[in-house]
Image (cartoon, rainbow, N blue to C red; front, side, top):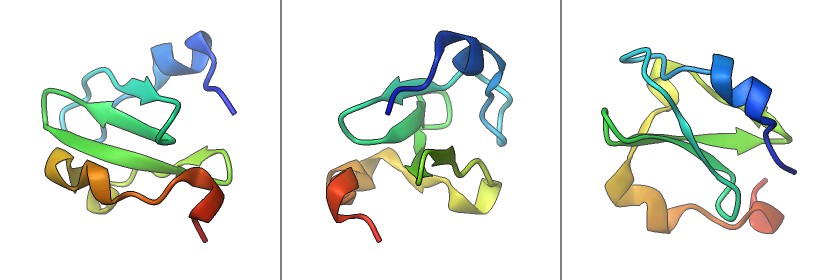
Length: 68
């Protein structure tokens, strides 16, 4: 799966309203300003403030093939 450029242009971090960067290999959207990431589950970005995880946990995210 890939997120289109058009969708990335309208998606925003729910915490700071800043831009998100798509990391296709990890299936996550990253907010560099807030230093958090949001997972994409079943091709749906989970952009809830409570779902933000610190970038320090990025290495702990299972690959998309292993996500529940």
